[in-house]
Length: 192
Image 1 (tube, rainbow, N blue to C red):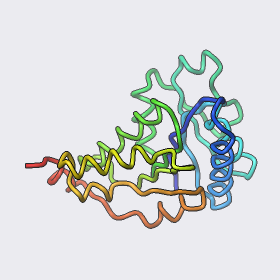
Image 2 (image 1 turned 30 degrees about the vertical axis):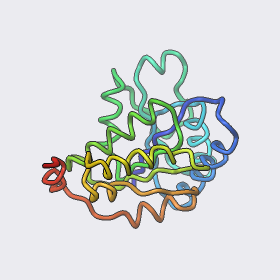
Image 3 (image 1 turned 180 degrees about the horizontal axis):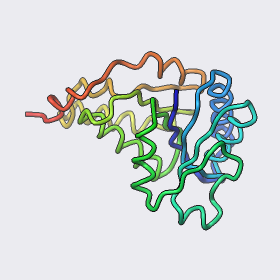
Image 4 (image 1 turned 60 degrees about the horizontal axis):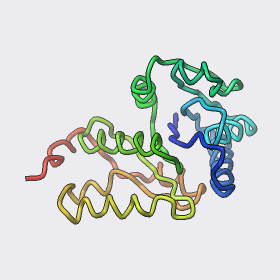
């Protein structure tokens, strides 16, 4: 199974985020999940890849040419694929992903997560989405998504599109236990 991980490239984040990321990498590697991610060597990206590789995991990176040119690419990955744009990179992630896991991150991680949630709402992506909420990082997003439902911008069934994991140990069970979703979701995406 190929797990796509969205996560941060910043190396300035608190240690608790690195610890959770390293633990998740170990758990995924030990349970023989492959990972596809943004291909970076810094921040949580590099931490994830290093942990996976340390424990014998397989890590595939996808990175745009311009990021590789400024030496953001990890040089020890199982494989690396270059794209021309960030848009192409995101599309490649979804072609191969059996599940998405979002770790704490900045605007890039949030943008990737919101795009895949939107695609799932339209029935264009039907696989599990798990949000790792390390130390409540994503609590404001959880509140916002719930408000979207309360204010009738989304249907209450849309709350089943993602699962929350409070600890790295919760991620694999959340993937396995994710509710089924299919392309018919588009039928209730439009609120009338």
